[in-house]
Image 1: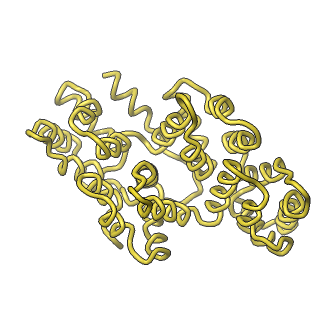
Image 2: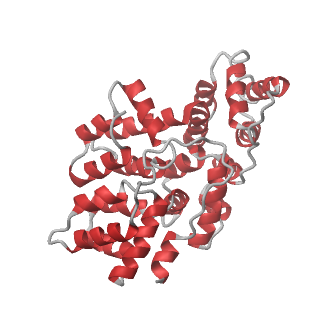
Image 3: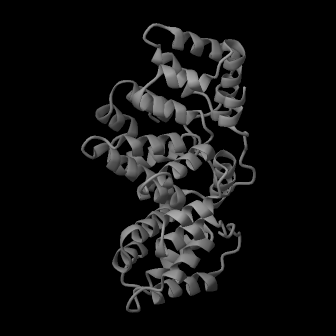
Length: 337
């Protein structure tokens, strides 16, 4: 029994988060884990595997429901459901389904671990996860990272990155961001906007530590107002200033941060669009975003996608993917609104 409980970990609910959620995957009504487990067992035993049933069930249940199904399956079949799914499935479908058997925080923690483990660093994944997650999400990710890998996330990030890039990521991982306040502090907004300008565009070189502390410690609503105010000091907006002032991974990190402060769901929609439309759809990126956001804000990502790219995300998935991978992604996105 160790395997399933170890893998699924503790079901931790995010209490006290301020960000409203817009999930596409919501709890199934009249949910019966015993019945779902029996159907999955039959689907796995079917000659050639009945992938469709597995997709239909697991994309229409939340993580906590999938967890109940896994326990029911283990009682029934006397074996671990995750191992059985792993043996029965392959390729992109297997990657998505195994991702769904982790909670959002476990999935994010695994993405980070995968991006820094072994030779070389997958900076793209590391930046996307650390720079786009809310303070509350990062608190949860740190806790889960320690539970799953018996390692400290800060130490792992510090050991795998360097320079100002490392300093920025560590500042985010330290989760010192202020909670949003009902009071709008116009003096502080002005002070921060001027500090960002005076630390960058106004001088030769860039005072990166000032940028890091403001962008890692202030609340998101405050920063949105700071970037508006910034335009009255600087001839360039914040994103343009970042592009002019810094390069490489540091530039990419600051840009992801600012895009997410301004409109996080549009950031993910743009990433999906870029991934789908690039030659040989970047499956890894598509999988990562859809699996990690389906219980968070994928519904809103879908609506930003349609508004900005003139067609629905579902239609783009139909055009650029195929087979079971296409079916599982569409299952997670849900019907077009």
